[in-house]
Length: 482
Image 1 (tube, rainbow, N blue to C red):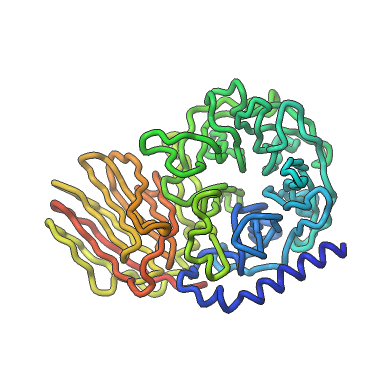
Image 2: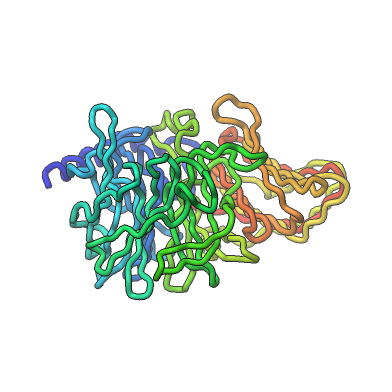
């Protein structure tokens, strides 16, 4: 208990020491969740509990690098206005001394059960991992119960990120894993009481999985039902780029199939990326009282030039995506910004009928660094269309090649870099811009691009261009800090 209190106090002191420097950063976001200082990464324990949404997160308060992680904590009654709560978990015990790593939460008998990975390393870097339990009556203060299972045979200590759910009167847990043959996998465990867990085997991936070799590690798995199908979301590490696919260091995506809880088996299709942008990883979902499957993801990717971000000199790094609702349409997962986000809009929409012929232009009132844009009734003939956001990034669609492209100015060396996807037709476009982030939703969330961007702070221009003839209806809202 004394060690726990010491760590919490040190973290709070570090936040207070860096408060002014953090707040003075022009790239601080307006309506996204960020760390008060230090580094944020994976969303953890996302749940609605007693009428309140709770989002915990991996947090390193002492620096903008990785290390012995805490669980930070945000809460909200409406998914728009968030309160930063006291630290949920600090790495104070022997089984978590190198970090309270990612996990999930479930309600049981009126209490919140949080499962997470305790990370332990020796002086030579050898790893031990423990899947641990902490219980809370108020979702704020937790009583640690310690490890609840042993490492299954056939798996390396790269065994982490438990996601727990209840189904047919039993509890299941899917855990990111690596086999002894160094293949990425999602492992399945089962329990009747959330305390004693039995290993049921490999659910997906592994040495003989349907996907074949699919990287050396699966992180942050999440299995859930959506519109009559069972979706397994996970973040594979070690995929090689393939054309326009898998361009980031690590990926995040899903497979669609059917889970058999009796046999502990999962039949599924091919992998598809959830997001095509530069910065999207470790997504986690929950089911709310409205029956919606909601998602948050980390707007970042591990080991991807993290210390080059310009926010590092202001003693903070990374943020969450906006919350999204998942829908399954024609076998493909769509992501839709939550309707609650309309509360961020300041006043009525500015509406424009846009007709461009081999020109670029801007429109009065259509500028800013915290805005929402929506384009409908898009028609493109004889070329491409694009939208530029200051000197930070631009989006481009070419109906001839069917390529949608997000280009940004690299924060590492200033060169132009891009991410792309194929889309047969662009019928609508919705964009959320927030100081140093952009989230783009194509055709009602059929495809998404999420990225950090760093335009010149004083350049809030938005420019619309066409190489041929382009028309659409444009709506623009200014968004305010909640």
